[in-house]
Image (cartoon, rainbow, N blue to C red; front, side):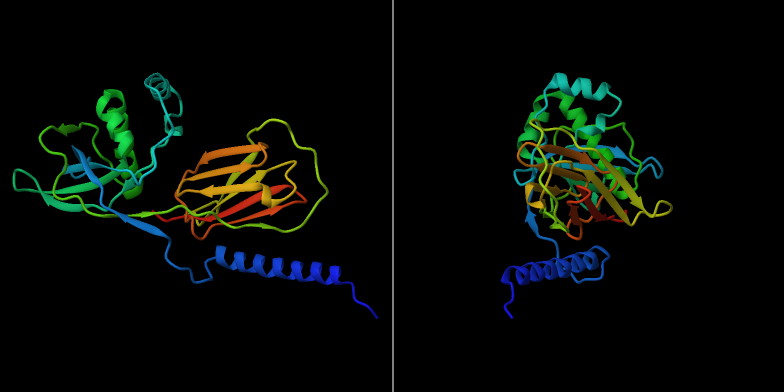
Length: 286
């Protein structure tokens, strides 16, 4: 009896997909050993030093706002657009990529101990902020907010920019984690659909698991009608951001998360029956 080679190929492909799917599930539940996330060590250049204080302890805190070309710039923004953004209901919709270093203890000019944080931003954006007072105020505000969110602090907005020094103590090297793209696993197939002619924002929902208590996972469910294959999707994850493009010019989604996620252990699955992309992202505990 002859065997249909095409049937064997289909069975082999389904078996391989199932094995990969199980592997991704194990990875998303934290049951697999993973290598350290890819990263790059940088030595940022001094920029400006900002003096503030902790609200609860009334102790001096300094921000070394540094610059590096390794850190990506934020999207282009004019002064007029920034002014409108600051007056809007959601000014945090504009994000400035930055690396927030660990606190370190230094000695100030009064020979007293103080806490210092190094904040690294793109060098070109830093120069723009130096030339525009509104952008400089915005940069300091988002730096303070970023440190408060990451380290559970409350910092005073009564700040002072030191004119005669660009940093407090010494500027240390920082380990910048590079972005990674999670694998998109396609689980089944479906007949082709007609594609819309213009790019649009897809419907989506963000779920936190468990719904009560500390978040362990953030799950994004994105509806993509008309997308017939995972090969049409380009997905990029940052520690607090998701960017999805469905080619050719079908959908585009760019959203920020309410919490930080582990990019390296995130997984994505596209179901061509429901035309739903599910991205499961482990939450990073603060």
